[in-house]
Image: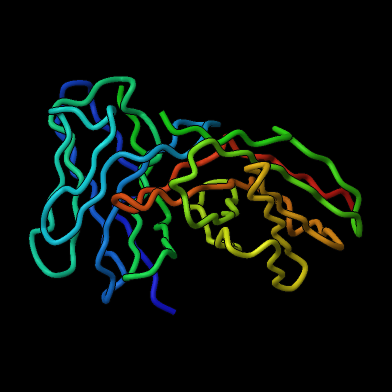
Length: 112
Length: 112
């Protein structure tokens, strides 16, 4: 069964450093998302991406964040200058032209 | 700001019992209501979902009941098993952009 994959599973970085989180969505899906989950809290929407452009972004998704779909398979989230409060699980999700949204296993980002 | 209120925050059920988790939404722009199951360290997995034109949907031991007039929906897990122990999130699909708005989550523990 096709699934969303994410790498790395765990990323440790120092405050102020840039990180790139990578995702491979399910191959025939059209819509792509990033969410984050701070430990013990709910899953929060960051950004949605469709037709090679951002369709919506949340208040969390400020100028330090960017997304890219550099080729036909990868979908990346870049944080330019990480802060301590960026420490969280980051989930990529994708969906076809229906409602069902499928999540990857997540990348645990730890900013020290 | 869209909000979804989920209760209870935690739930302990004996094996074989019925687990009931409730959610209330505010915005009638939502038109798809999924439930996700999350095990520790994993991504949310789509469990079951319902459209607001249906009052109930059943898949195996899992049932969603939907009350459109009260803006509430609930997840019922019949014959709860220790393997059902996880965190459950209700969500709403916001049709503009397709983001999911999640509830706070319910940590379910099923005791043998």
